Image 1: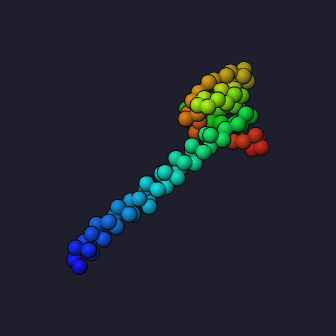
Image 2: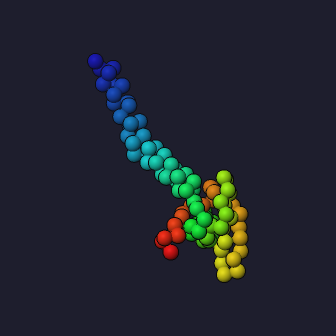
Image 3: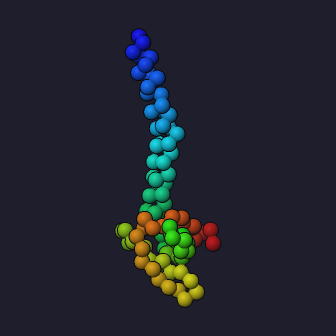
Length: 90
């Protein structure tokens, strides 16, 4: 009986670690991946480097954004997108 309680007490910290650290991180990663896969033409995006632009082309793993008043076009990986605002937001 003592070994059962010892085992339970040893598992509690691992369970807490999973529910308070690992699980929320996985949910956040899943939400980021979902956001990146839903990028559409016309969406305003912010890259991990802080560049703000409008999506003008979408491919499987890359996007082309147009930024600035000179309409500079940048091709980048979808993983470089950190935030998205849909066309309806602006």
